Length: 170
Image (cartoon, rainbow, N blue to C red; front, side, top):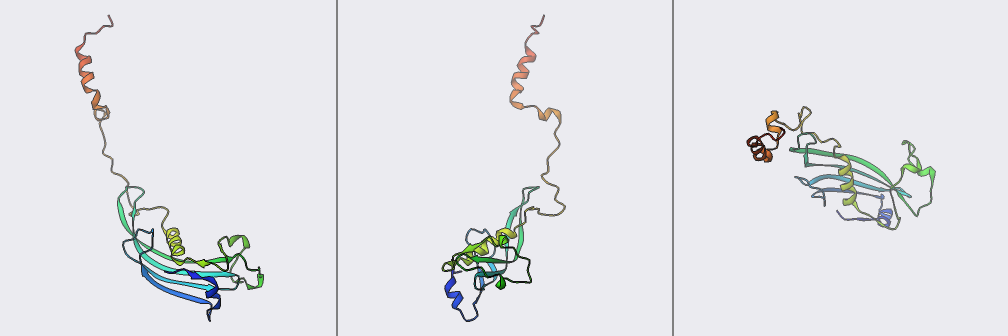
């Protein structure tokens, strides 16, 4: 996915670019290519970006440490503020509860929007925080040890020698 030059997007007839993709995303270790759609809309002093993507990744279970395949689905949207633009409150979407402090992401209005990097970030945010191979995962199977098994075998020779020595406590 190529980066989008923001001034070119502003001069696009409908100020919108939609990209359908099916490719491996750099730095994301997935079993299948990431498949989805990204829409970037220029709204004057901000970009509205949406993605729907899916792939399969291999994760390691937090309980039993076994690897398992996980179907990763991402449906995200974000508003990215253009730094050099004037703030026009009337142009903000009124159907959403937005605070100016919520719009942390920003780009220079004459810069580029790296679509692949943004998709990678959204996929990483969609990864589960708690990675479990199964809801009933019991964890690592630890065999029960007898007290004799808990002694360090490296000391066995010294222990045998101790039993051969006469008791010097007399």
